[in-house]
Image 1: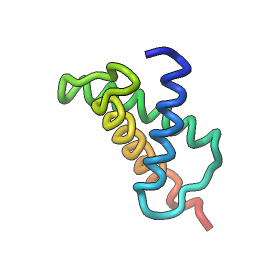
Image 2: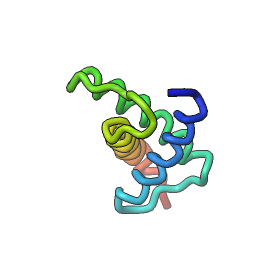
Image 3: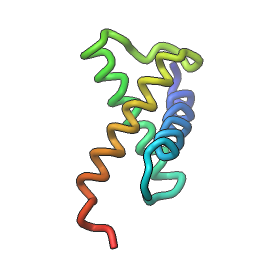
Image 4: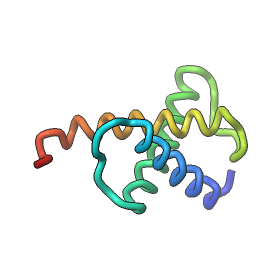
Length: 87
């Protein structure tokens, strides 16, 4: 998968993860892109480590599930870190 395809995957996966998780997550399109790309990387790494699954190609269901799952995990961790900072 190419660099730009990975960025698009991360942006969409981050947006879907923000829609799935209840609550208020701050940030705009840039933070969604960052969360999605790092989440996709995290999901691909954890999927390969635990299940032997990897990010294969852009249109693979496995790729999307790993990217969205990684983004959700990343949002949960970010929520725990910034829990006391919200007003």
